[in-house]
Length: 163
Ligand code: FES
Image 1 (cartoon, protein in one colour):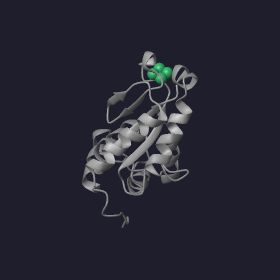
Image 2 (cartoon, rainbow, N blue to C red):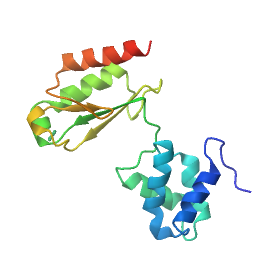
Image 3 (cartoon, protein in one colour):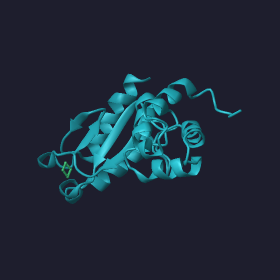
Image 4 (cartoon, protein in one colour):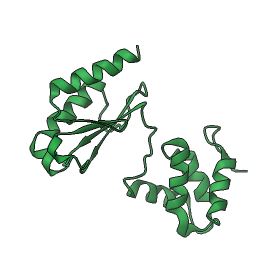
């Protein structure tokens, strides 16, 4: 018997693997399917797929999941913050903006999501809005010409909404 946490629904995972013929060459598509359901890749799902698909192992699946930036191994926060660190944004000060966000949401070093589950933070290479540099996106909404002060005000509003 495979021990899996109740955090994952094995029937849904079985369906995904079935849709891709339990074929290891479809692993990326399977992981995309899992991420669509959970918004991240739960460790238990990685292990489950790694033991069910012939020719794979949990370690292999984990390796693929960590290699591709499109996959997240941590649950995302209610607010997904993306700070652009493409060339235009970097030159115009995206790093101070990023640090201001980290500090304001109290994100621990090495973590992507805050302990309260409210915020997750990542950097992206270009949002396609270089004239608005430095730019930031929260849940798909773009915030142009960010400053440390603006970050503080925006996060304050979100915190207030969740008091
Ligand atoms: S470099 Fe940031 S939007 Fe293009």
